[in-house]
Image 1 (cartoon, helix red, strand yellow):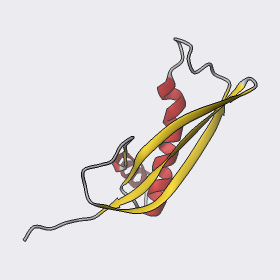
Image 2 (image 1 turned 45 degrees about the horizontal axis):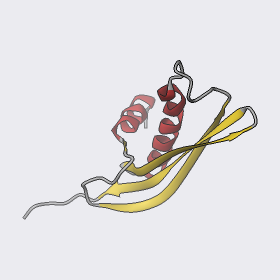
Image 3 (image 1 turned 90 degrees about the horizontal axis):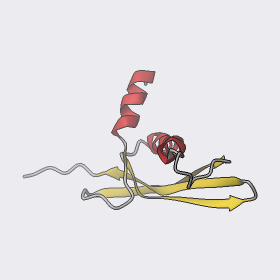
Amino acid sequence: MTTEENFDRLEEIVLSTGDVDRKYIVRDIIFCGTETSTNLFAPETDLNAILTPLKNDLKQQALSYGADAVINCHFDYHRHQDKIDVLAYGTVVQFIQSTIG
């Protein structure tokens, strides 16, 4: 798979914090995390910038399964001293193709 095809496939992978209205099979549960010293609750903090690498990691892991989505994603954080660990996890699923008739 070329880099462009890989990028296109990553863009197609669905991330959802809930369930999806499609039939699927569960492939696995995946986790990823990062550490930051950023104050997550400061008005100037861009949470999307902090969470984007985690979202990309979830998609990369789903791609390694040949899956279509990561559902029921959860994002959590834990403080320890002056650092914050940010954790993401979800369920990797593969959509079931159905035909009519």
